[in-house]
View 1 (cartoon, protein in one colour):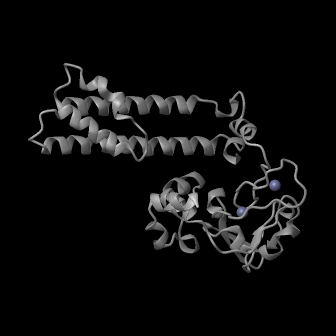
View 2: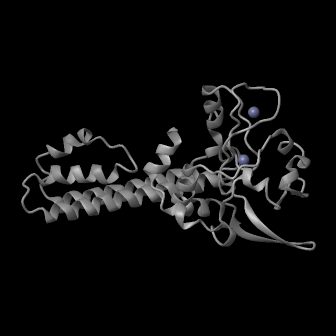
Length: 270
Ligand SMILES: [Zn+2]
Ligand SMILES: [Zn+2]
């Protein structure tokens, strides 16, 4: 929600870096499919083999049904793999350029209806977000009594929070992202800067007033495997989005990097 509301810069950066990521994926799918097919001297149906490989390579980023590409296979002219891969790469580059152009001209603030409004209408319940990590309140009532609450918070890096070193009256921004979660920080001796610029101990976060005071954040250090995977998988994108680094106090643990997408998603179902 923040990204849609707060200026179009962040959203634009995010879209541009996603586009870049996708472009690289497709490029590498094109070249690896070509390589695989070239090595298979035994197969006659090279085009169809190439398309099989191409769809398989991309299955991680996009669901491209192999059946959608039947048309290409049966075009008489397409028999040369080199030609196919060159044509695909050129078409891809053109497409990327066109999208980048459209992206730079697009006025993202002028969605006729803001994306988060559309989403909110589809899901009833409370939409308050944790002021630290942005996780949405789990209460199923829109204007419920009592505090907002979520069971599992997520790393604050997702909202772009960074560590600041304080020395007497001086403050030094470290540009190092916070990978900790709110529920473990409220048990720590760390402080945060409230909206009015006051430093408040996490242990007494309610002193910062609303929206902090409207949340019940219980001390709990358990972090979902999903967020560990997400932060390490998209660390480059997050660094680019906020122009900060996962370094020093914000270094991503090696163990997070070893989590596979399957592990992350399977834990989410439980
Ligand atoms: Zn939180
Ligand atoms: Zn709530």
